[in-house]
Length: 550
Image 1 (tube, helix red, strand yellow):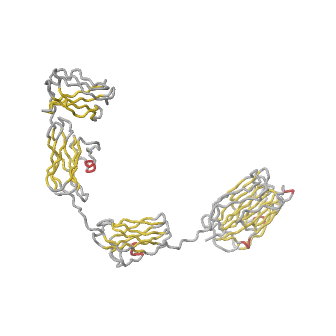
Image 2 (cartoon, one colour):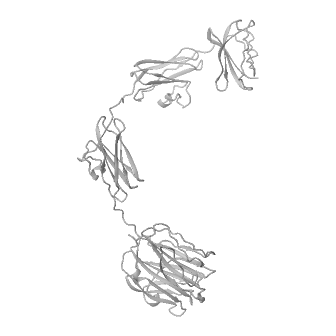
Image 3 (cartoon, one colour):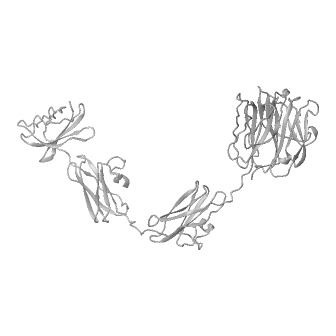
């Protein structure tokens, strides 16, 4: 609830502090009834340019503050040039009734002070008053402010001094307790004490334009926020099938805290709030599905229901309990029906195949018991089995590119073979195969025994002075060993990455057994190239050399 100011018990006075006994001033103060009370004493000294020493404020007891309770100093602001000071003292839970207030003179003897005594009740029991915000003396005569954060349940109090015998005016929205006029003996400085209730944002203090402010202080008397007794409001309930066993449920809420609870039942009858929170249907038995989600913002909220029965009509029922324990209305979706059951059985692979068919080729595959989907295979140089994801991505068990990867559409059960090319010669390899059916179920992985590709027989091809010439042609000179006037296959690859630079082409040897030159203009100076020469009648007979284009 908002903090309350006891306006009937406000006391204001101006007095000159005497250095004679009791070395201060006594006044009678009335404190009204009310819980969590707070008495505040604001003291302004237009001629006090620094904080006093020995100044004390006591409530209760007898004259001179004997036997009373000392108030706590909240804060002080002082300006040395224009000579003014503002102080705030407070006491929590002062005694109800009439008490003596004593202000001890301290080092301010012979100086005039302006005092306002205020009592509040219904304050926050934990933090009744905030820390003080203070300010010195700006040189400008334009209004200035202190920004201090308050809520609608608080009251902000201000005290400030400024030049000008006509008084200091508070900003709009503030209520003035009154001005204390100055005189030439007080440097024509006036003081004003004011307050502002029910502020919901930052508030400011200022002084009349044209006057020079000298010092200011502000603090917030804290109220207690009214408890939240309003429950959230739910609307737009959702119930949508997302599969044979799943659905999306939820609703839209106008509060951004607490928990939303939902159940899915086969009955349109809405359960009670307690039943929804317990995961039950309207009959008090376990719902087909129950869940909850934390709410941190307003708007549509959804939950994913699972474990439902295929081709079954359902309803969702939702409730939102906010952070204060208030329950929303219960909302129920229209009927929705889950989808028909799909294929949930994965294929089974057996009899893995891995058989070499040449220096760089092989046959791989396996036997499957399902006639749909896709079979994926990789050939690696490691017997370690890759994962399903790696096989589908064409990778080995290390996650790098396999020696070969391929796939085959499956339309019938039985043995399936994939032809492999591009394997390294004279190398032991392994095939690894998986089958994913049309319902996206993955089979077991099967791996073949190791198989070794054939080696390459180089039979007297003497690449004596091989050259790759930049510009108009590529020249390869073979000194001896090749049949004359015979066709050979020639191709050129990038030696670094294996990319084909010149595709396989048929070239004929001349009368000296040398391959004729042929033109090409895309070789790069200084790049290493692999030149492969093969006998068309027996591709195992080949010569390979690596050279730099010059």
